[in-house]
Image (cartoon, rainbow, N blue to C red; front, side, top):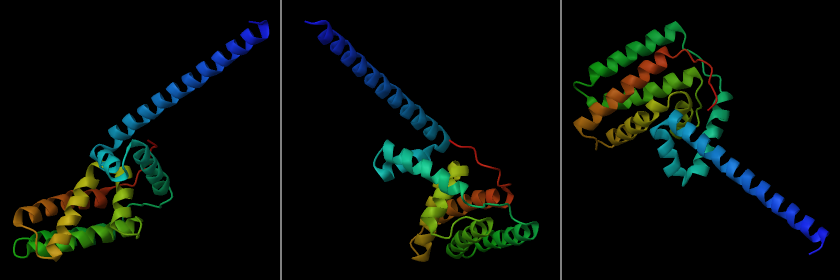
Length: 188
């Protein structure tokens, strides 16, 4: 073997080692990012992994959510709106005793109104839930469940326990939305 062939072999081996090292580093970075997303989003991370078909797609979706959310002007409610919505919520809770389906349907609409006034998107429930998940991942699963029960209530197919579960989920969400100070987001 000539010196040129040996040098080419050494350079080739070095290039292969560099490529392998970069691939290992990139894989480690992705795993760390996935762990951070799982920590930040909790069960929402699992939901997105299942909905998108894998971790790579979920990673992309959650990162895109943060970017879309940063473009929104989510703001706290004015005090007059807070009081009005708090009274509407109180009335929905009272109505639950005699008309639980109607109360849950009203709670679903009330949450949508509050979120709309705060600056959440009007592109439908799925986008509202996605944007809510960025800052309040622990609540979004309950929001999805409550919204599904509200849909069942519209068809008169929700049972009493389901309606109670939905109302409790809406209570937590309403309380959060009425008192959220819309603090700036921190990137995942």
